[in-house]
Amino acid sequence: MVVAYIYILFFALAFLLILVRAAVFILREYERGVVFRLGRLLPRVRGPGLVIIIPFVDRLIRVDLRVQVHDVPPQDIITRDNVSVKVNAVVYYRVFDPKNAIVQVENYQYATSQLAQTTLRSVLGEVELDELLSQREKLNLKLQQILDRHTDPWGVKVTLVELKHVDLPQTMQRAMARQADAERERRAKVIHAEGELQASRMLQEAASIMAQQPMTLQLRYLQTLTEIASERNSTVVFPIPLDLITPFIPSAWRAANPSSRGDAHETLPPGPAGS
Image (cartoon, rainbow, N blue to C red):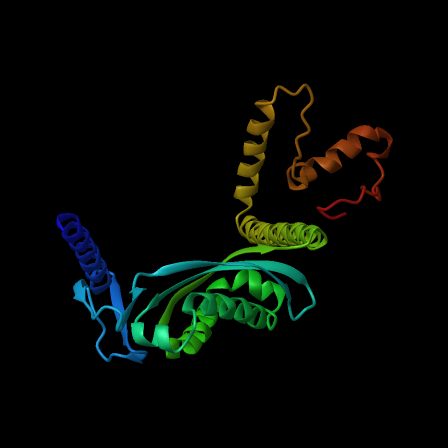
């Protein structure tokens, strides 16, 4: 009899432990419990903390309220200008209504993942390659708004969508590299032409100032001589204004032609000073 009582007590304790295990739950701060009683959803969401339900009558489903990160696998996309690229992205979402996340969709994580893939293909297929590469912030916002609008009835909030990587074909990469080189060369030529234009304008202004003040030309000559002398050149060509030697031209001509001194109608060589 004693042995029988021991077995009965053992089975009673085991059954009690099973009841406690099935009735008592501890939910963390970021968890909520959705309870079904005989298949019907109870209106109140349980947790966090200690939660007690009726064993074998109630069923509790845990729901994580933290932000979850989903990596969208690379998708083959043909842009509007017929360029084939591979694009992957990352989606950040969280559950804000645990009841709808359990009741309205079978698996909200899988559903959000599939929706992100199809939305990524449809949205990026409507843009050109240049827009895909240069306007990522705009595309990220558009993807986030579309996903959030579709997941809102599920009790899921899409907080952020980021395009991670755009994989271009090798031919397109080489074409873009040539285009970048041509653009840099064009900019260099434009900058050089603008520099030549500014230099010509400055030279024109300098020439106007020297025409008004002849002494500035003489100072420029002296400065040129100083620069030439610093280079240790053996030959120096120094330009002299013709106005300085014009008065000496008739005397030099007479010295070179002594037989013409008595001629009253001698003809002087032409020069800037007159006849």
